[in-house]
Image: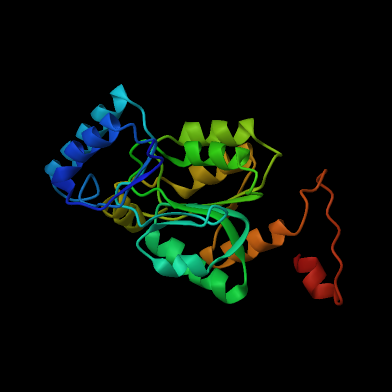
Length: 251
């Protein structure tokens, strides 16, 4: 049996490659190739739909397309185009991102700051693996204790919220949502074929689902690192210990 196929070929060849993978019983595919619905060309969207149709007959999970790949630190698997990911320390943080560049940035910062990961997944254009599927998987993954999401947009927001609610209280979910303005929304669509949506809508939905939404990507790793060494509180009571009055009041 073939557990995983890592595909890096021209976009027009991918439907045929998928047919071959399914015929051989491949259990999962990482599709790094770009040139699908993220490009300003109807041919890209058509190719995306062709792949979706193929998978309707035999549902095989696909990471991508238009992704850098994925890393499973616990399995010593680097299914990406970046060998430096192998320098990462094993840890309990699972990162799911639509942006390969953001995965690289956070990973390089993690190497510098000695922060460990369990899994890093670039979901790209989300052919049939989106945030709901990844949150559900990481909630059941014994190697992952903290879930971090970098989101540009999501095609199935209700699915994410319902999945988070179903697992609420099991593991912390931290999310940074970008592309909240008109310009950012347009950039998200051209990057990963996403419709970003308004910040207020996502903030309210995150709060209802128990997802911690952050306003700054700079604190994403720090928050995850802090949660990795701190148990989830059992109640809403918070105590603040400060050496001076001002910082304590601000907290």
